[in-house]
Length: 252
Image 1 (spheres, rainbow, N blue to C red):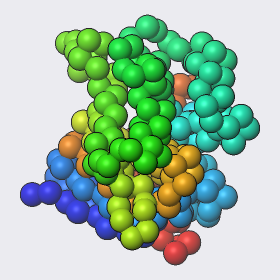
Image 2 (tube, rainbow, N blue to C red):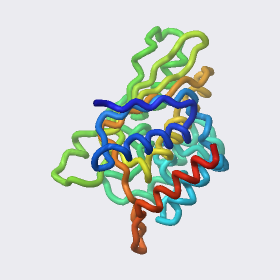
Image 3 (cartoon, rainbow, N blue to C red):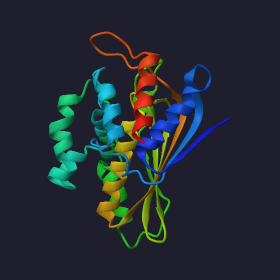
């Protein structure tokens, strides 16, 4: 049976999703549907709940911003604007983070550089088509991040977890909505940063098309309550997780 989480913002969605999946056998679930009414709310690093999760992750060499940046480099966009920040990302940022030719770890790379796509930048093509008055379609704005040519192998680990993005234009007033499909989803290390990054991606599209921000829907086809490890050794414990959740509950 699928689990459904409907919440007003990112941090409350994260908290409820973790609570539900953690209660499942093996602390995992399939086909968890997350509906975030306003993906720009509960998403700032200075939000008390987000800050608590970020502090928790930093103990294990992770951070909320590191995760969100793989989906959308918000600070780069604010500094350089569009479309200039695309070149800055590919010429300056990507070479420093790329670990191999098959997978850099940045979904934004695949969203903005796909050989054979129009202009080889599928994301910018979506923006261009959305703001073209000659384009009548409101549900034909798709982005694939799974690439069979690069991602099909026999390894049980690594590679992309976010597989597909589908943008929709909602009426009254015109709003940008997004549905994202994850093949695998680590809810402690990744989920909050993923929600924030997806919301920033939506805000970018809305800003560049002159529309408003709509809801975010995420389908985790497999979700797990992971216990992140650090490069220096040591892992999160169940007691650490309980303490974090108690902290978040105390902030609401």
